[in-house]
Length: 133
Image 1: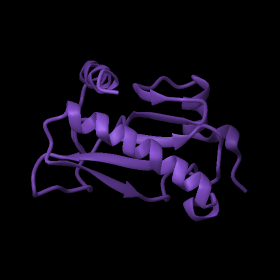
Image 2 (image 1 turned 90 degrees about the vertical axis):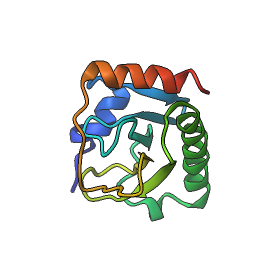
Image 3 (image 1 turned 60 degrees about the vertical axis):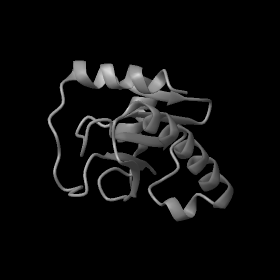
Image 4 (image 1 turned 45 degrees about the vertical axis):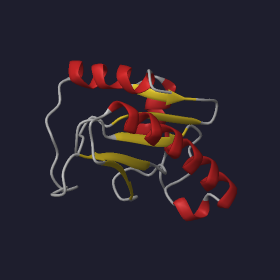
């Protein structure tokens, strides 16, 4: 059984672990990934621990999550000089439903390769994205 007190994303929601937030409302949080696939890689999560299975959230909760993803992706598209924002959903690493919004800067996009980014660069990118809501 998974103990949510050990959930990395719940600790980010509570502020126990700092993050570069780009969007937040009462229900959802979007923040920059600390191990990004590309510059501006954002994770969108429900604030309340929903478990690890997107398909058990229910269609209404899923639709609300995707509405936030559309909003965040729109701000990313205005901010970043990418070809498009891609969506990637997996649930193997962290037991908290999450959506990856990943800017694609070229056609040779590879989600298995991570880029190095400094905290300062992540902070600058987060501020730019926030400004485009």
